Amino acid sequence: MSMTEDINSKVKVELAVDNADAEELDQLTANLRRELLQLDVDDVTREREGAPPPGARAAELIALGSLIVAIGKAAGALSSVVRAVQGWVGRKPDRKVRLEIDGDAIELSAASPEQQQQLVDEWLARHGTK
Image 1 (cartoon, helix red, strand yellow):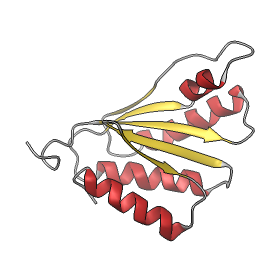
Image 2: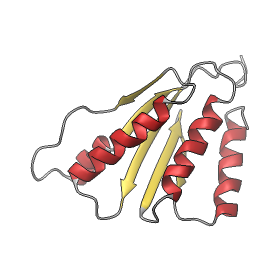
Image 3: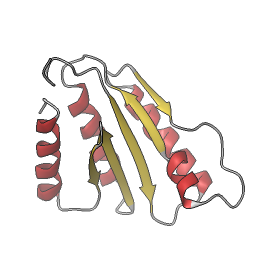
Image 4: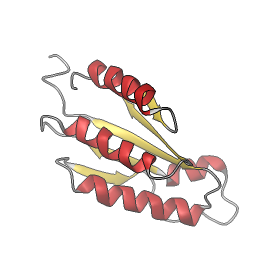
């Protein structure tokens, strides 16, 4: 089965915001989750529920800022998720997001729009969509 036929996959979305504390990262993750749920996806879940304990380490903050997006079989769902994440990143220069499917990752950050679009196009092409 080719990638274009088997689009039923999950995308891991890891948020990073410079100088954000756990509470702020949790709120931003919740906001992005709500945005992604408005798309034609099967589900968007938090990788880890609950607030981290006081003094949480960086690894715990990464888990706090992680979402799992179940793409399903809707044509264009992966592209719409990527566009939504690009929009989220573009709202503030201190935001970065890492998207991963089956070990293949891309980081969206403050790269120029042209550089970022080229990376996104190549990544989407590897996953049978554009």
